[in-house]
Image (cartoon, rainbow over all chains, first blue to last red; front, side, top):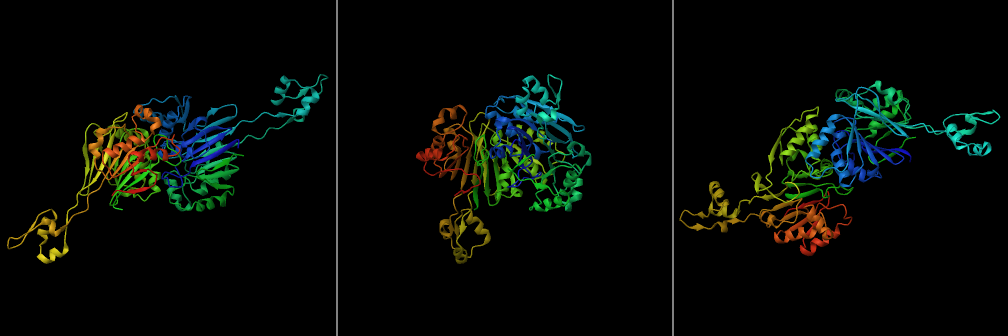
Length: 304
Length: 304
């Protein structure tokens, strides 16, 4: 449960009674990162195990209403709950204007600061980093400026074998060096190779989010080899022309991107309401990329 | 089923997984009137039998987010569904600014016009009228300008007794006059009294909405004798001071207003999340006004 994704909304622009508009939460060791915030996101959060107090970073991919109309209610609720710590929002400058405009009419001042980081819809960027995680944005191609996001766990240090510490009486200072990759040199000059006294750390995991976008192979370098990819699949093959015209993707195209990017698992979402049975889209994708799931609101997926 | 109220949201500012923020729909003969539009209203509408195409009038009582944050998504959805007929919004001027500001960034122009009617938070007004219904606004007292609304069916004309038409060979022209209240005069000058040849029409029904407001007896003349009253009951007696400070009402106060206004039935709502068991509030109200119900999201109440 250390690195997971919870889908809060998997509908496209028109929500249904079963699917809310786009919103999802990445949970890394109980730090919560919200991606997009469609209408009703705070209501979906209330039904989940996500702790609002541990949500400090919100990433809005683009300024179509179904990806941000829930942010006003969420901010208002955070204020009513007495939040005082800074909230970081990663999006485009117009969102700041909209939030300021909205809360200008509020009779209660928000008790916390909002710190904005503006996305670059033309270039790949590292937009957030802490000791455990790096988050990147990269350009998608939609009708308005839009970014995808990649969450990459950082490579952990090696673990030193406990019996070796005892055997060679290694000091704490030396342990730090060995964990960083150094060999250990005995007092007689004998070199003990790093791999003989350490256990390799687990491989770091990664998650990429791509919504909304036309089929675009240019995004592949940014999402190459991720463990989990969420890619929009608004339409099926039957609406291929409509997908192109509206700068969206089909399920087959999402699967083709997953295949070319060599990801481990694909989740498709952002479904058009015209598909009452999502299995149609899922089947289309699985023909090209077998390890595909259809997003379900409220469900949590491990990133591994 | 000719005149009814459907509750879409009955929570106060913080929504829960069971209660959405304020929104409700008055249905008069399949014409739908939306009162307030908290976040998620369009999602609640999707789960109900309300026909979006027959929703032409939206009344927003005041500009606290839990009463209007859902209007952006609703307007966007009406546009995506291809609405072309005018939409009428009754609220305060800032809402127009907010809607314009929001849709300035939209890449698709809305395919319908929005016509705004500004509320007067100081005076009683008739704000809408058709051949079957009159809608009035009146001042509530909250932290910002706020209005309540009353929906009054119009008095229907009398029905003429069919056997009398046959007996006296009454012409269509005379029938119209009789339905409007005239007596019928025979050719020999004999007067047949109106009440002897007509059946009285059913009494017109009425519904009043009061949220959010401090306890205020000055509203009683506006809601006197209505068949159904919705009055906010954010708090219980335990939070009487808090109610006063925040310009809200307690359940007892809502019941007291219902009693003094001589209404037939009371629905309380706008519950604070602190009350896990709404029966506490319901019991408080029933002590003062027995015919009280606690609002439930998704439930429809006949106005009779």
